[in-house]
Image 1 (spheres, rainbow, N blue to C red):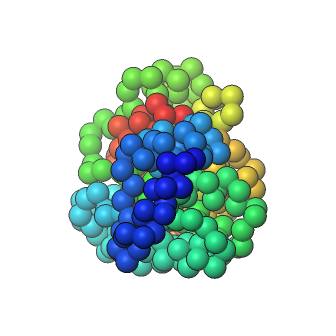
Image 2: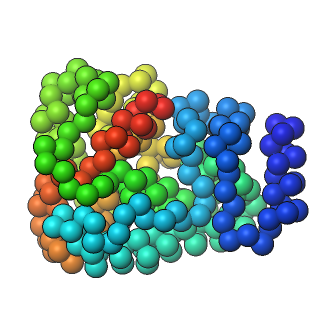
Length: 249
Ligand code: MN3
């Protein structure tokens, strides 16, 4: 921890006023190895407290997610979670130079504001990265597909089961594909902004794909037709990113 402590002091003393504190991948890797509550998070998958740029334009997923929904979702809803999780961190003495995952793993020790906004920020940062412009015959490949076939029978069966979890999540929440403590792929859902990394969650593990089924994610285009949003969403899943999370599990 010596290096990390020195690094924190260095950061505090030198870039205190910076809007964005970037943790280098080497430093991030060290943080994960020494501080992470879980060995399941590799470098490159660590989530910080700042909202990162959207990896595509607001209209890039058009016909699946319309530009207006994307703009409001990213610049209003998700931005608000990022702002509030920092406010809660100041109030509750959380070091935001450390990964957000540390807070999620001990979320029962913090306030409801922290739970809602740490979850909200983490879930959305992951959500944006897990999508990309529409692609025909969009499907996973490689070791993730092999594991899906083994666990669910086929990719088609997986999609059916995941879609069902997303459709039947009552009210606001998320559907998840995650890797549990025994390295098994699992499907589940959670309410509000909870996720499988939280120690209060009914489903526990490392999330590799999440689908936002809050009405703000789809209502402008789909209104009450959540199943249609889910069906279309499969076309924009970035399976390379999901595979990367799977590889780091
Ligand atoms: Mn949302």
